[in-house]
Image (cartoon, rainbow, N blue to C red; front, side, top):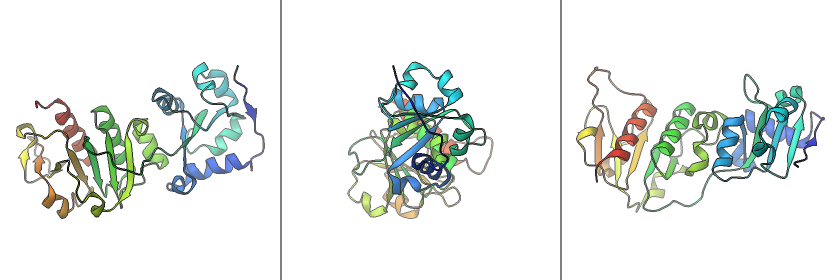
Amino acid sequence: MTLARSITARDNPLLKELRRLGADSVAYRKLGRIWVEGEHLCSAALARGLTPRTAVFSDSGWERASPSLRSATTDTVRLSDALFGSVSALDSPSDMGFLMDLPLAAQLLPGVDTVLLDRVQDAGNVGSILRSASAFGVRQVLALRGTAAMCSPKVLRAGMGAHFGLHLIEGLEPHDLDGWDVPLLVTSSHHGVLLHEARLPKPCTWVFGHEGQGVASHWEERATVAVRIAQPGGEESLNVAAAAAICLHAASTAAR
């Protein structure tokens, strides 16, 4: 039977850490941990075989939680509903969360399908791209400096658990990929081979760029293939997260 320790002091060090992680989009870089809230994200972590450092429940959340969530770790905390609300980063507080080790890596995986984020600045777009990458079999997502913080609370929520199934590296500079031998594919609204007509290499690295400026010119120069998505409706361009989903789906179903 899992026993949960009770915390009642608002200034408890653990609660201070959770508030910091929920309020500061880059606090995870200094603390080496993330705070994920809600049953869906916590269950997604468990489904990937991960064990949280600490599981935190409101009193009402503890009563509703499944046995697997209650027994997720040896360090389990119960808070009053009001005290849990004081650490929640959500407009409508959840009733549980996990404090977890940072899901970032230091070394690139060679020879695998990869997404490279080139200064994608919107947290919702980054999270959505991570979710598509996970859904369509990409192993690795790399973020260049200038991309939204990959483990910020907003990106974690938008990723819906994708973080836990991907090899993630952030803060890269272009020269960190010198010698990278996985073919680069870039997207453009105006030039390149139509996606549905392109022969897509396997494995490959998809480069998705800044929402306004697109992919930087040095990536276009290094690209093996430039593709564009047919838009018979006549829109000028697609949102980068929507374009990524289309490209990654096409790559996952392409004949080899």
